[in-house]
Structures are given as C-alpha cells and as structure tokens.
Amino acid sequence: MNMYDSNIISNIMKDAGFDRTYDSSSAEIIIFYTCNVREKAAQRVFSNIGLLRSENTKVVAVGGCVPQAEKDEIFRYKHINIAFGPHAYHMLPTYVSRILSGETDRILDVTPLQPQKFNCCGSERTASHSEFVTIQEGCDNYCTYCIVPYTRGKEYSRPVADVISEVKMLLARGAQEITLLGQNVNSYNGEAPYINIGKPKGTWNFGRLLHEVASLDGLRRLRYTTSHPKDITADLMKQHAQIEAMVPFVHIPVQSGSDKILKLMNRRHTAQEYIDKLKAFRDICPDIQFSSDFIVGFPTETEDDFEGTLNLVREVRYICAYSFKYSPRNGTPAATMDGQVPDDIKIRRLSVLQNELMKSQRAHNEAIVGKTMEVLFDKVGRKGGQYVGKNVYMQSVVVASNETDLIGKFKMVLIEQAFQNSVFGSLI
Ligand code: SAH
Ligand code: SF4
Image (cartoon, rainbow, N blue to C red; front, side):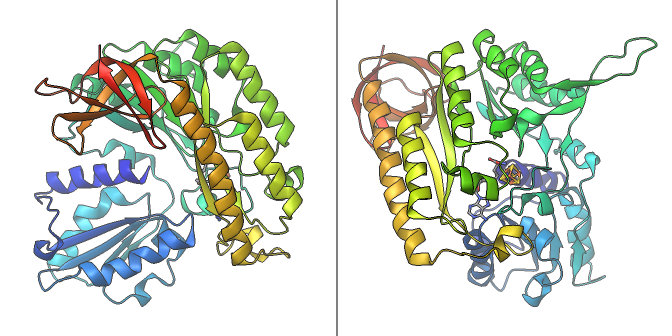
C-alpha cells in the first residue's frame, strides 16, 4: 500500500510542476513515505533523513504512518518541514508551495481518512503491466500487537464505481495484471454501483466486486492482498473456482500456530479452524497455494507455543512467507503485556522458523520442474539475454531468450531447474 501511495504522490507532484529525480543530492524536495508496523522500519526513516539531505534541499516531507502515530514527537527531528499522515497526501503540493514561499516552515496534517483523497491520482498516471488498486483501507480488527487500526484508521471501502473506473483506466493504459489492495480486502463492503428505482443502493461484498473486476476487458490476472482468515468465506472460495483470471495463490496471514497466542493476539480463530479453511479451499481449488505472515516472540510465547507454529507450517506447506520478531508498538495492548520475550530467544526462533519456511518454498520450486506455466515478464535478468517474470504463484521465473523484448508479455515457459528463490526455464 505504501508503494501505491508513493506512486500516487509522485503523480500528484508531477501535476503540480515538479520533476522526479533519483539523485538525492540535486533534489530540492525530499519526500519520505513511511511504515510504522515495526520499530525497525520507523527508525530507518530518521537515519535516512540525515543521510539524504544536501545543500540543495529546501523541503523535507515525511508522510505515512510514522507521523500519523508520532504526531507529537515528529518535529523533534529538526530537519522536517512537512509531516503528513496516510490520509493527507493529496494536500502535499499545497503544503510544499507554502514552505517554498516562506509562509511557514512547519506543517502537520494527520487528519483521519478522507474519501476524496482517492480521487486524486494525478492526471498522468501511467500503467505498467502489473498495477495495484486500493479498494479498502483501515482496520477494525484490533489485533493486540498491531498499530494499523491507529494509523490507517477505521475500515473504509471505496465505492464499487470508483474501483471499477480506476481499474478500467489502468487496463486502457496497458495494465494486464491487477492487485486489489487493502488491510483486509475480504471484508470489503463498498457502495453498490447501480440505483434500483425506489430502493437504496446497498453494498457489494468482496466476491461480487471480484466478479465485476474480472469481467473487464483486457484483464488477464487478478490478485488481492491481504486477507484475514476469519473473512475467508465459502463464497470467496467459489469465486476462485469460477473466475478464470483469479490466480490460485492467496496470502492468508496466520501469525502463530498456538491457540493460546492467537487468543492473546485477538485473531478470533484457532489454528485448527485456520487449517480447516485452507483444506476446504484446496478441495474447491486443487491448484491453490498459500503464503502467510508470522510473528515470533509474542508476549508469553513458550517453546511449546512456538512448536505449534512449526507444526502448522509443516502441515500447510506454504510456498512463500514473511516472518518477523514481535516488535512492541506504543499504544497497542501487547506492548504492555507481561511476559515479553527476550530478544535472543526471538532471534533464535525467527531463524528456526525461516529455515522451515525456506524448506517448504524450495520444495514447491522443485515440484513445478517439468511443468509448463504462463509467465508475465517484468524485467531483464542479471546476465545478458535473460528475462525475469512471475508465474501465477509469484515465483520468479528466469529464461534466456533472443527475442528483443519480453517485458510486459505473457509467454508459456517449461520449468527446468529450481533454486531457493527462483526457477529457470525455456520459452515454449
Ligand atoms: N492486515 C494484515 C497485516 C498488516 S501488517 C493482516 O492482518 O494480515 C503486516 C504484517 O506485519 C502482519 O501480518 C504481521 O505479521 C506483521 N506485524 C504487524 N504488527 C507487528 C508487530 N508489532 N511486530 C511484528 N510484526 C508485526
Ligand atoms: Fe493489523 Fe491486520 Fe490485525 Fe488489522 S487485521 S489489526 S491490519 S494485523
């Protein structure tokens, strides 16, 4: 979502007459867009401000969830001129002009979500072959470790008509793969597009939205991220089975395999309920694969609890996963729970878990050797003549080819060799 927001900011600034540069020493305005989910991400921005500022810098703007969460503290960092939350990016051109004109030297905007921000995407928004579209933002789940409900705010679903018109615009500009974005896309509940005379408009759920997006001309692949296990419904599984453009790959974060920890996290499901849902998904869509997020070292996590997580990983056989040490966030209930786990234990558990996850990723990479799969190419490889693309499972597929340009094209590839993070093959 930060990539999506940053891209929009870049377009809005372009409309306001500023060119983008990747050379920070010549930049007059430096904009940081920040994540506050873990402490490490938040700290990095402050060290980078010092590193990137130069004598040409006139404005430093820090946006996103760090200023939203630390509004009272943010100006302790003296070089910052503008601090704006994730719901104020559309105001950035105005704020930059006010700083450049000398009217003021500090502006803070951490207003809650304003739906009008979604209508500001910049007139020159170009589309690559694979694009994101935010459909939902914010979260009402209040997992006890998580800062997101306090930074991105309450759940808000964009109206169906707005989502459809953004997807149509991107498809018309060359996009072929769309990823629908939100903190919890599967709890989507957006205003319906049609008026039935005499009746209220009502809302559409996620399954119905998927159906509509998938019917648009030019869409080859449809993805979404991220989803909460409790909102994975039988209806959603059915949409996967019916809609051809839906990729058979879903990110369903579980965080832990211990029921005690899941309860303390306020995840509202048990490990077995999660496993049963994934089994039901596999029954309906035999080629479906899953990825997940994990937190190790949540307060009171014992070796037994951690073993539960390892067992769940062995049972589900994820093809990819993100795993983190628990990071206490100010203002969240878990930050003040008894039983905080020492860092050396978190480090060890993270490494054991990552080893297990790597084994199952490697096994999946090996299992597709000999298969023919469609790949959407998105960049050149490290060696001359190589191209790299993604199959439906988001695996990086590398081929050697004499064709002049494969980027943005779908091609069938025979997978021949598997590595830890990629597979190699040849064009059919
Ligand atoms: N809405 C998504 C996740 C958003 S945050 C969901 O519920 O799945 C992305 C991931 O960051 C989470 O899934 C979790 O694994 C991790 N995360 C969030 N808060 C964290 C914290 N305080 N410490 C460590 N990891 C955290
Ligand atoms: Fe955070 Fe996701 Fe839980 Fe919402 S559902 S509180 S975003 S981890």
